Structure formats: C-alpha cells, structure tokens
Image (cartoon, rainbow, N blue to C red):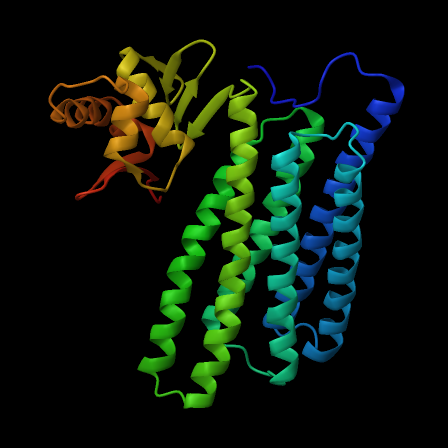
Length: 317
C-alpha cells in the first residue's frame, strides 16, 4: 500500500521548513481541539465544574484562534504549505469552527449553571471527544505518511451517531415533560455539541479528497472487507473474492463514503460514465452480486435507500 503522504519531493531547505512549520501548526490546533473536548466531556460527566472549565476551554479557543492566524499568515506569505492551498484554507476554517462549537457548548453549561446534565448531552459530549481524538490522529497522519482513512471513517461514524443522539435528546425533553426553559437550554447545548461533530466530518471530507486527488488511496476497509486499490483486489475475512471491474468501482465508492448514502446518479456517473445509456437497473444487479459476495462474512450490509441510492453500513456485533 502506498501511504498517503502529501508532501512534495526535492524542495529547498526554506520551503521544507515552511512545510514542516505548517504541518506542526495543524497538529497543534488539532491537539488543542482534543484538549478542549476532554475538558468539555469532564463537565458533562460531572467530573469538573462548569464555570472553571469554561475558562479553560476559552483559553484553548483563544489559542486556536492564534494558531489559525499563523496558518492564514503562512498562506498569505505565498510560500510552500503542507497541503493544497485552497484545502488548507478550508481546513483551518473548519478546525476553528470545531473549537468555536465546543466553547459555545461549554459557555452555555456555565451560564445556565448546569449541575445535572441529561444523558443525551453526556452521550453527545462523548461523541465530540471521540471525534476530536480521531481528528487529531487524522491530521497527524498527513505528516507521518500513515493511512488516514480509518480515522476519517471514524469521524463519519461519530457524526452519524451524534445525529441520532440529538434526535433522541429532543424526544427525551418533550417525552419527559421538561419545562420550556429546560427544553430551550438543552436543545441549544445539544445542537452545539452536534455541530462540532458536523464540522469534524467536513474536515474528514477535505482530508479524503486530498488523499484521493493525490492518488494515494491505498486501501479501504469496513468490517472484514478490504479493498486494495493498487492491486485491484477485494478480500473478505482474509480471503480473496473475485469481483468485476464495475463491482470493484461501486464498492470503492460505497467504502469511501461508508455510512453515507451515495446517490444512484453518482454511482452511474462515476462507474459507468457520462455516456452510459443502458438500463439503470444494472446498478441494482451489481449491488446484488456484491451483497452475495460480501455480506455473509464481511460484517457489512449494503442498504438500498429508496429513491436515492445505496449505503454501506457496518453490522453491529
């Protein structure tokens, strides 16, 4: 497998120093996000006071702002940067958004003097923490030439989980006769927590796009299914499984967007091309063949989403 290193060969020493500096700033910002998420989870789990912790998180948010300014200055200087310039600009803004969402949730916990967080808010705090950890590892993987996809897949899963928990939180508030004040308070807090996971997923999309464009998409995995891009090989539970070219490309798209719906139009366009005029049911036939080859031993399920497309899910043990 070719590792997803996005650095460029044979650069002058000054350029290499700028690239290393930019990469270090990205990792420092990701580490700051993880530290803020750890502090926030401690408040939600009733292991730390809200007021004092909010100040700590505010300090981390200010630190993140300073790092973001340094990165934007690096971009403005016009020199070498660690990744594609438009992607770096988007990435810095999204990282800042994650920190802002964490700080906003902490602020409301302090302002409302929360003493007994509701269970869905605690679950969302844990989702933010897990996402922050995976985010830190994903950013670090860019510099280590390591496989980034396990971390980005985890970010997608945390965002899906947070969506579900947010719905459960709102249902919990209305089903248990909460006061209007509590409904407004907790809905606000939970929405900021969920927003943090949304921005983490946006970052995952940016990182995955960088790796794919650079041609370093080595292996994609889900459950016991492994797709090796370079070898054009699929294995299930360690055993090779024969797949056609079209099956391989359909599976590649579904694995790349694991847990998310891929539209039929996208699958037909990317796999069969713009000029395909055949029966659209051929896609359903190929997905059916993949189900027979993967689902029994692969720990995955290919889900048909009526009127939209297909989604690849992990099977819960």
